[in-house]
Amino acid sequence: MTAVDHDAHHAPLRLRSRRIVTPGAVIDGEIVVRAGRIASLDSAGADGVQRSPGQTIELGSDWVVRGFIDGHVHGGGGAQCNSDDPDEVAAVAAFHARHGTTALLATTVSAPLSGLAAALRTIGHARARENGATAGGDVPGPGSTPGAAILGVHLEGPFLNVSRPGAMDPGSFLAPDSAALAALLAVEPGLVAMMTVAPELPGATALIRELAARGVVASLGHSQATEAQTAAAVDAGACAVTHTFNAMGPMHHREPGLAGAALDRPGLSCELIADGIHVTASALRLAHRAKGTSGIRLVTDAIAAAGMPDGHYRLGAIEVRVDDGCARLAAGQALAGSTLTMDKAGPDRRPRAPGGAARGGHDGLGQPGPAARSPGPQGVDRHRDGRRPRGAARGPQYAGDARRLAAGPSPLSCGSAARPTRRSPRARRTPAATRSRGRRSGRRSSPRNRRA
Image (cartoon, rainbow, N blue to C red; front, side):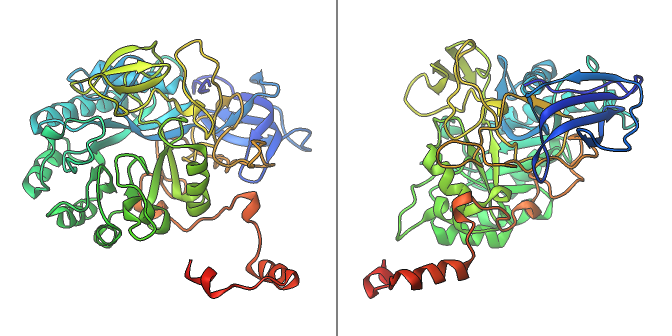
């Protein structure tokens, strides 16, 4: 996928394709880009459209979709966000921009407070340099700021459950502590946008309440929480779940736990890693049916090894090995983030080392941004047989860019976790129609079935 932008000092740029994903359908037409922003969308053969001078790029049958927002990015292209070098953080943003991500949350793994503070200062410096390059409100042209916009930081820890460490060092985990939280948030005021917290820990409810009061998204993860403990966290202000199904207790029909509550509660927006490794295709379909498109945020959880050959890398200070695109702890079998990029996410997609055959994309489930090209949507919004439904993707709002989250509910804000607004093709039945079919077929619900 190639992110497309245009210098403000040039004439309008037109991107012409037979497959442009819009809010209502996939259309044949062209996107007009002015001053680095999407200005309009014109259907092919539209009457009365003035064709002003400018460059036209013929994309043929290539898919054109909005730029992706990735809320969980540890690294990519050999670089990572747990760093003391702003150039390394900028390299992460530049790598993901080459794969269609126009904005991201730089994500840290748990570390001692001093290490997290150093990473926050580094990311803050990298973002300040980016913001300086975009002073005046114009989106820069190619070569000036090549990376995805750094929207803020996702602190994954340190207030996590040692029984669900994932690939992180449980020795760095802390009990929820208001003073420690205040110290982290004070390093770069306004930089932390999200924090993952285990809600069952003593003091976690008060910490979540404090995060919500400060405008930081409290995301639940690395947790053994029960359904009741999850409900208490939601009441306190939690509104998101970190890499749903991973690093949490399994769902049971008498104790759904965090995983079950995440699917059931409309106020929780669920991260999902659609790399074919972390979550199976059937689990992705289940989550999509339960939450709808608006309740899911596809993320990569990418580490430094994304886009790199198989081998040994680091996630924070921990050594990771990558075999056939799958990252695991060098000293164990735990999954250690992913090598995924957003242009390859999908229920039957598995990342490969450079030169591998896996390709694909998805509808992004994010906010509008500079146009991006993709080989074709292969995301969670598909028929069971793998065919793309007509008009599958929720397309962009054709004004603005991914450097701001003003156009519609933000995928990083608590207000975005609304009730499902879409259903899979098999679920588009009205309750009345379903009941009438049941009456015609003569089926009845037995007491045994009602108990089940």
